[in-house]
Image 1 (cartoon, helix red, strand yellow):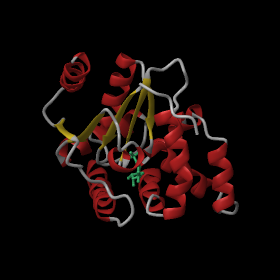
Image 2 (image 1 turned 120 degrees about the horizontal axis):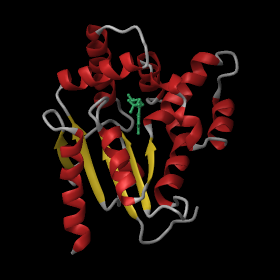
Image 3 (image 1 turned 45 degrees about the vertical axis):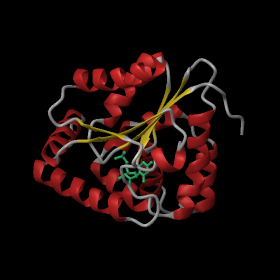
Length: 218
Ligand code: C5P
């Protein structure tokens, strides 16, 4: 695979609904970076598992990943809590993670020429996918804030949803993502911690922008 030189690479890890996606989108837009929400890949596989039960096996997934593009990840059906929970189960599978690995590397290290770099968020980005990122962030927020954000997001999609279930699902996913053996969610020593609980979207953006600008100006 080709690796582009001198591009800006930003790696972000975070638990579910901590605000990383919104933040990464605005950072990517500002610095002209390719943005990849890596959770969407696991969600897409979960969706395929649920909707194509009889076809679902490793070679089917391999083929789907070979034909994967960013537009396919925009499918609104991937956003439900059911898919999120299934995704976190699938994400424990070593073979699945291997299949997804090269797509993530391509986005991170060889984004299309029109971009000046890449920004990826997920659970193992800072230490497995882009260990040499120029900037690493661990984005988090308290459980109440995260649940409320996810609740509003799902309500916006006209999903019938109850707040208590959202809290339960987030806690379940946290437990699985932090404690699994393969590629668990963790904050690496070299990642900057950003707690978004009491910050507006704009304040989060400015906080990260300040960190990036300070270092890239020197
Ligand atoms: O980020 P999102 O909540 O959409 O991710 C869905 C699930 O996919 C997570 O709960 C996690 O188990 C898995 N995932 C992962 N590694 C990543 C991104 C997501 O294991 N890099």
